[in-house]
Amino acid sequence: MQIETLKVFCDLVETRSFSLAAERNFLSQSAVSQQVRGLEEAFGRRLLERGRGRRDVLLTEAGEILYQQSGNVLAAANQLKERMRGLAGSVGGTLRVATVYSIGLHELPPAVRRFMALYPSAKIDLEYSRTTRIVRDVLSGGVELGIIAYPEKRRGLAIVPVPGDRLALICPPSHPLAGRRKVKAPELDRQPFVMFEKDIPTRRAIDRILKSRGVTVRQAAEFDNIETIKRAVEVGLGLAIVPRPSVLDEQRSGQLAVVALEGREWTRAVGVIHRSDRALNTAAKRFIELLTPPPGSKPIAP
Image (cartoon, rainbow, N blue to C red; front, side, top):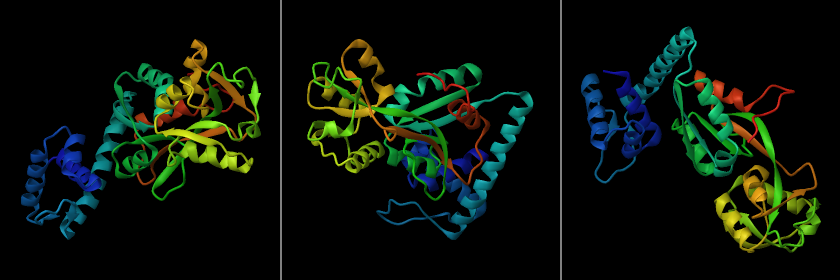
């Protein structure tokens, strides 16, 4: 029996999917099935409940025991690898990180480049996804770190706050508000807006702030992607409120006007999430350190 086989089994349990477990381990689904059968033969016990038409991965009592103990074995193996790397003074392995588009495309690249320059033996596997899926993937063990806006406390998750960013108003250069240095929330009342979809944390935060100021906007459209929102504003569909770092290129090129919003509440909170029941490996710790500069120092500029 090999440690890699135990990892495949744990991935199968956590993802509840043969196809996802196979994808994580660069195997075929049949190879995953063969490894599970090999474990059953080795222990002389059925590990999974099998039924016709059943798609869920259901564990037997023996399967539950194997899953729990395999987690301990894998954690000990990872700790051993980290300690051996520490003796050599190196940071290696692949760090899987999931983040939302607005952060991953416009704010993380400098930190990723810095990490790769400092630790050339390590690799970052960066995925883009929606917040709900990122939380699910972190809890299931699919990724080590998630970087999201407005992280919420949840059982099983640890949150490391990192420097946030300002939200800003964007509009076509020809719009009457385009030449303003700052805009107050009441001035946005009844304006047409291109919004994030309702389940996106940044959208919920914007709605809360506008409601607290007694402002009602007219929804012209809603999208789940920051790039689509910017293009919709460019063609005059409406105004939008977005993270300022995500529109710096369009501001420089003159495609969009970016106007500051008056008020301290227009700061978007950002945090790194990870499983609270697992110790972070060295690569994850070093990456978080790059995202959380010590007091008095400047964060890595986008």
